[in-house]
Length: 466
Image (cartoon, rainbow, N blue to C red; front, side):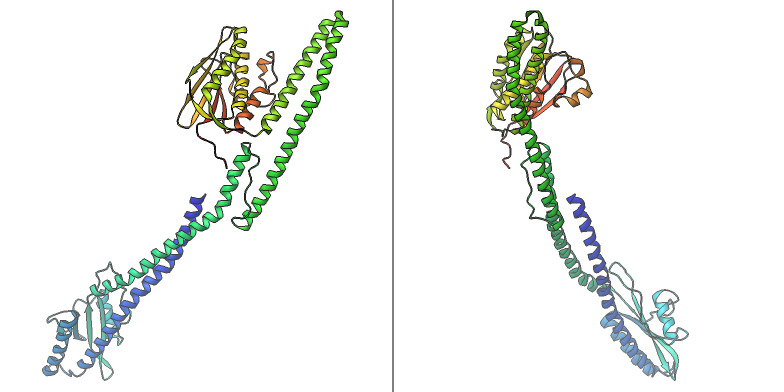
């Protein structure tokens, strides 16, 4: 967004600067040329005044004086100049023999000569630009007794004029470049000022979405509209945190309060089974359902505590924790006829809450052993890369479909194909809550050729305290 906004502002500022710079450069070039044209008009007017005294073609003395002035002028300025009768024959030219009027049927000299024959001085020759090689033609009429009897025509080189125009453009280009740099710097500051609160809001929103409900934004930066948005965001975050806190407190309190009467009910069922031996099967069924309800309550209480307890992340030997939990679950797996083994690295450190990691790994291994049939194998593999330490738990169970993989880890969700397997559907939810609170990640995928692969990723570097 910053790139697009900065590009738009830069484009607009460039357009404004160019809109100002082009007329300024054109005006400077016009002014330089106008000075040259005015000088040539003055020169042609002076030569026209001298030519008025040449009363006839046989007046050699005055023609010689006029020729001498033209030669001096040409030698001094390098400007070709000539005085021509109406029939375009030369009265005097410099350099000698220049036929400026003979080839003046078209172009700038032609227009200037025609205007002078009509009794008007040249006043608006075409603009010369630095990349042109054009010359400037200026003509003035020689008037005697109210009639145009001859024309003074000058043809000026423009090399010096073009150099002056370029030199005059250098300050303009430098000023435009400096103004553009200042404009870009101002646009950077402006976009940073506008977008800094937006980035802060985006970061805080992501943190809240990933479970860091205490994240807030400062409502003192940026435009007033964004400050009001930041205030509204903080109010919304406060309300969301309060609602979730009330929900967790309710779940924890309800689970705890229901646990005592349920234990009392189960105890009474045990006593009742002793007094009514003939109803033992029905009482056993009720007792089993009661125990299942107790497991659900324990799971709810564990989930509420996992979501509420702050993580105590520290540098932990993840491989040691994995080996310890695999060893603790190995007797359970052996009783079911499942081989449970640890593989991979024997030493790998990462940042984690050791208690939370152990609890989460218990839930994952328990799930893997539970769904692996007799004779199958569960493997806990430790690996690492530049940023993460990974614990990969592969089981030999039936696995899950793509649709089921999208839902695994949701509270109380269990695959419809595995309803006959005991469980509450809360174990992996608890594991995810415990891991994500400490900056870790939990991912699920199909194992090949069959089974489920659960990957626990723990950061190797200390998580950002902010």
